[in-house]
Structure formats: C-alpha cells, structure tokens
Image (tube, rainbow, N blue to C red; front, side):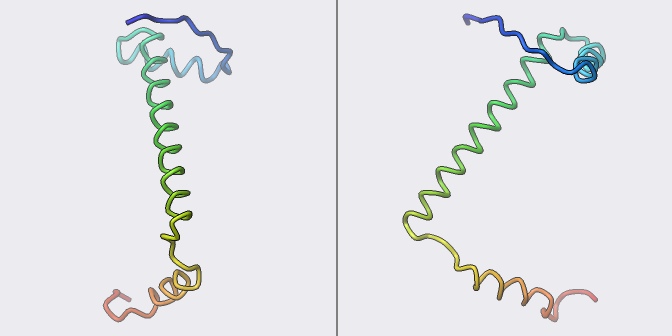
Length: 84
C-alpha cells in the first residue's frame, strides 16, 4: 500500500498520552496514530452516512410527530409494570 507522510501539531499532553499508549502496547507512535486516525475517519464516515439516511427519511416523510413522542415519553411514568 502506498503511504503519505502527514504531520500535525498536537498539544503536549495528548502527545505524551500517545507515547504512553505506544510504550504500553509495545508499538510505535506511528502505529498508534494510524489506529486512532483510522477509527476517527470510520466514525466520521458512519456519522455522515447516518445523517444522509436521516435526511432521506425526512424527505420521504418517514418521521414521528413531535407530539406523539411527547405523549409516549409522558406515558413512561404512568406504566404500571415499572418498579417503584
């Protein structure tokens, strides 16, 4: 796989934590940074996918009316099968 060197200025406390994790895992700082960046990118992609999906639902009218949600939430306190 081709690679590209990227640099970033990070706060010293964060850099120290990365170094501590790398030492604890017996891995390089670069390996830890790659793992962290991969996880962050995947999280952002999923967040974007879910946002697009939600906006598509709104466009199709596949939503729950706010008053119905409020009524449901109010009913949670009135359920007899909940422990007191």
